[in-house]
Image (cartoon, rainbow, N blue to C red):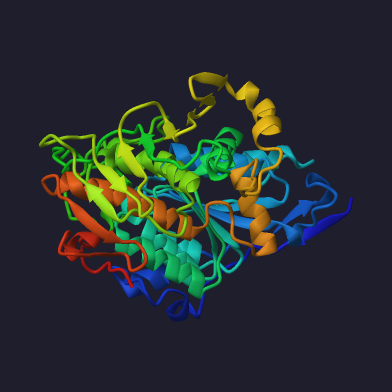
Length: 461
């Protein structure tokens, strides 16, 4: 039987100082020790297990970092692709990384005549993954407070990057990520996957082609801001590297709400606490504010003013004013609703409603083909079309084009989310914003709000 070799030996990268100069670890000696353990013996795959038109050396080799519910789903998607190969999984919790390893090895073993496969390896430290020369790209689905550090290190290590939304924890982090990706000429897909869903693209094309007239209001219905973490300390499960889970965040005791034990099926509530996430504003906002930005044509810009909520201690009601006068409101409606003088459009996952004046033109996604024929047949603006967020990432790795949710798009969207949260966090603050310079202006807003604190020795390069 014909067999083809795939070498997956990484070994210690002697260029590690060049690969990750911008990120400082707890111990350089510890890092070198970790890197030296990353070597993997070559293994053999029978040529028939992949599609005939995908040669082993043409496959994109992936490492997954943060093996919670979201990344398990992403990994399963990549495992179904015969043009990709998952060879590494990383998590601070041993049960999660071992379960993910088993999933990958079982998937590939099932495709082999011999029924065995041990080519996917576990790592407890993301730097082990980045030190592997065989890995082309990484898929990051850690808590938000880790996104910037790992993504920048990955870009410096020459890896392409799929990173979950929201992009990061601060506005300065967002720009640092863009700079690292551009400097290293990497492909970066933000996990704002609604851009790869037809209903959102069609809604935004209708808006961008002026079918509703000039948009005056957009309602974005997502949850509220995060709160300071007040969880009590609990006993630390054996094997969990809690110090690494915290990383740049302030030292505090373990709590299972933040880092669940074992393999869980829910989305942990770390996202509700300011030290690790931004609440509903950044969690769902990274989806819905992203669609507002897309529809308004603001992928390279943003609002110029933040108008605070009417009530003290509000969790909705902040408004963003754009230079053309459009107002985006946090709250109201369902999903994302665009309002113009000629009509309105509401779009949400699996939902699409469209009115011209008082007449309802469409009330579900099944009407989208008719809408496209009647209202978009002669459209002058055609938006980037993707039917698979992961597939788009893979295609762009090969073509070296920017994907549908490029890092700049992710940065601009998360900046909008952070501006909303900053108003809530600072006593309903009003702010004036220069989206080109990414700075507060006219004395409205504190430059210190653009950063988040880092626990030594971690720092943003």
